[in-house]
Image 1 (cartoon, rainbow, N blue to C red):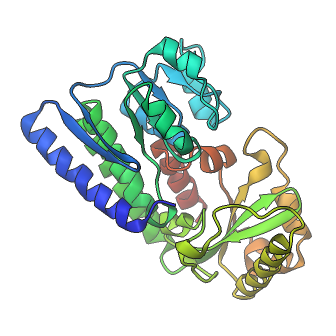
Image 2 (tube, rainbow, N blue to C red; image 1 turned 180 degrees about the vertical axis):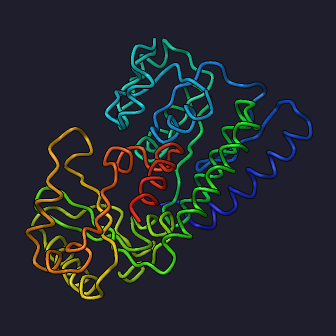
Length: 320
């Protein structure tokens, strides 16, 4: 996991670089990222993007990628790239190195799922890792927006988008002030809560609500899922159940739901799963209809994209 210290340092370095770039209005631009630094002597013209949140933000900036992974992401991104001549560069986990060699990109952008391929990709072309740490999510989104604006000479557009994001956050938080929530991840018939410090714990920061689940130290959260039916897996399920029961007893004002089953085109069962759970069905949030369903593909596959974040803020504000 990327440390909070790295994220904060990276954001500060990004803004320092932006001030310098703005003052000079020219390249080179030095980029600090999750796995090193890179100096670009000119704006990249042919880019390959393995991270859908970055692809989302680039789309908001009016920048097109020449190479994209097999698209199973949000509908708005699929629509944006429908009919465009782009190179299929593999999947979010497995790059197609032959396709990349044929494309000859002058910049490769990775994050999250594709981060493990950094060293091999960096041998093919200049590569940056724009992974965002959940415990510093909004700072990471803002930092990536400004960084991409600097790389592609879109500083003015990035500043405009940043201002609109700040306004959307302020408007939503004004309406959600004092409200509590519980973020739940559903997959088939299973429920998992996410508190601050866990993978989707950033949603409390985004929506401006207070978590009824106790925050966790990100360093204590297991990075790998234990083997099914192992003692570790059984212990984790038991701990989850205790935490979920305690959170539901606190009666959150809102339930915030991410349906994993629907994230990659499958059938979602979130509503059915929630309705069968006695602790949820008897709770005030469920009975009052205070259940906010996140767009599954946006949050599971394109977490941290500018457009997805703005739509979520708009939708939640309208629901309040």
